Length: 151
Length: 151
DNA sequence: TTGAATTCCTACTAATAAACTAGGATTTCT
DNA sequence: AGAAATCCTAGTTTATTAGTAGGAATTCAA
Image 1 (cartoon, chains in turn yellow, orange, brown, purple):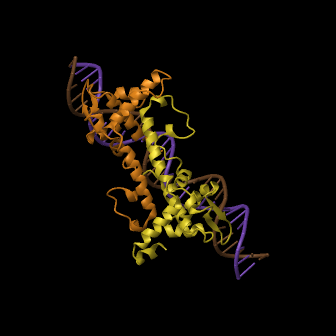
Image 2 (cartoon, helix red, strand yellow):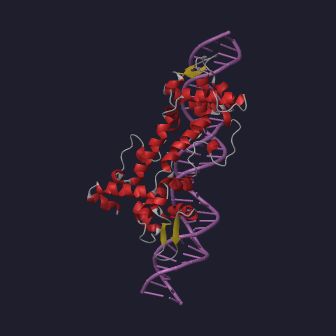
Image 3 (spheres, rainbow over the protein chains, first blue to last red):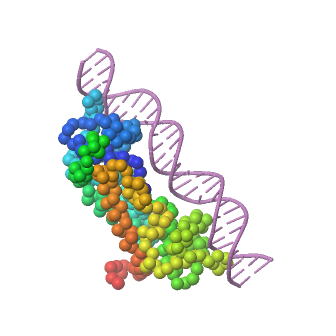
């Protein structure tokens, strides 16, 4: 499992906020209830997302969270990197990491670079608006009873 | 880090065996020494590789391990899946896993499927012979410093 | 102006997984 | 016979994950 609950729950939260985009602040408790997740745990996950500028918060009653910008401007890759760190397969291909002494003749490193590139190509090419579009498309093709479940 | 030491050490072992292909059995201790890894730990990693038919072993003195087939016939993806399990980003996209009840309108699942596909495209398109070729290419460029790019 | 609803923050804890280690049984070559 | 190796099971330690707990600060609304 390459994503822990941090990344997976975080993505669900952000999708929820994207679906709510333009409708004002959404309290974390609502998100947690919709997804049947612990709100105190989600609190920990949304904190770095706020600090990174992906969401804004309004404190106090009637407060909550909302996306800091349009869903189309937030890549899935950003969310994942904030919550999980880089999805690199090994330390030696992490940014900022000093090259290991064998880097120039290390064939496994070359492999790791290709894997990293493959993953980043996917997660940086999909944004929250894409997921919102998928969500609506999938729901329209589904019967009404099920749709209510998620509403 | 999407690969644990199991996958990373396993890949190094298999590359070592690929470099030794055709030269007879190689004792695990030699591999461990070359890579400065614990041989008793590697023992645990090579066991599933043998049981999956990727390597064969010869017991007793002068014994060791060797690839069960040509390096070009062993995909990096096979090695990783044996040692790490599937690199799926979430349970719901694991093979054999029952579809979750929301699968048909779950936009995050669609994302997970794309990530899975992106990873598998890379790791199943590279085999051990490719890594051996990279290894030789990288080493030649290193030893003859500053003769970049060519050859 | 008070109380409820909310974010914000730090610290703690329990469970699980990762990364080995230990020890011995078995096999095979010389 | 003895050394060199694989093979097997079980233990141990350390790190990470997945949360809980508790309270301070902020803001709205009655």
